[in-house]
Amino acid sequence: DTEQDQDRIDYYLNFLKRFEKENYDSAAFDRASEEMNRLADKGYPIAMHVCAKEIYKLALNQEHRPQIQSRLFVEALNLFTRASQKDFHHSYYYLGIMHESGEGMKGRDMELAMEYFIKAASNNDAKGFFKLASYYAQGVYVEKDLDLHFKYLKQAAELGLPEAQHNLGVAYLEGQVITGNSIKALGWFESAGKYGFIPSMVNAGKMYLEGSPDRKVDKTLHLARYWLREAIKLGEEEVLLLYETVLKEMLQNLMISPGEYDSDPNLTKIAEFRQKVEQWEKDSINPGYKK
Image (cartoon, rainbow, N blue to C red; front, side, top):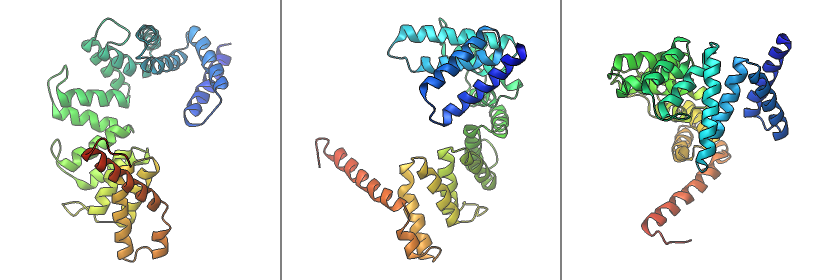
């Protein structure tokens, strides 16, 4: 029975993961959630954790119904706690978040939050390291320590957390927390960009468009075009005009033909974006203006 239950957990866990990426019907999702709840009731920590995450996400969207939200937070907290008591270390980070914010309890408990984040990090949880990095950067509950901030940020980045990879890239680019290194900065931006982290895509595109001040990163227009185009695909309109600059430079340098320039699908988006900008400018001058 135990082996069959474990098989069910693996199956429904994979199903729920796929559901986040693909458009499965809601009835199938409800059946999967019910089954995971049943397995959680039987004491399986991974099922408890998955159910707690779903309940927690649901609670975050119930701001307009505080009583329901409070009840859901308590339920999520209980499940995360039970999972952690069975040494399911993925729950430590969420317990830290809930104690930090006071969700599901009477008030914040920063001491316990810090303890849970340390436990998460000790189990190589990237988000746990990232939280510790932010605490030491800002001096939240602990004394500000930029060396520890960088240490934990780097560990989170090396474990594959895109936000940490981006921040590490910024640290290397700015050269304030650590000695500046544009090559490493670009490398971390590209790593985070591969995960679809838009700010890193934009930064990589800009670095390839402009080159780095220390001349270690060369101006490389086709790579600038690639990263900015990937950001646009994910809905980042703010870089459309920058993308247009790249295209025009490539055309001027004979890196693309006039036909390739004219057929670029983003030219239509650029024209539409210009119209939006013009409208925003008119509205800011005269809020009552209507076209």
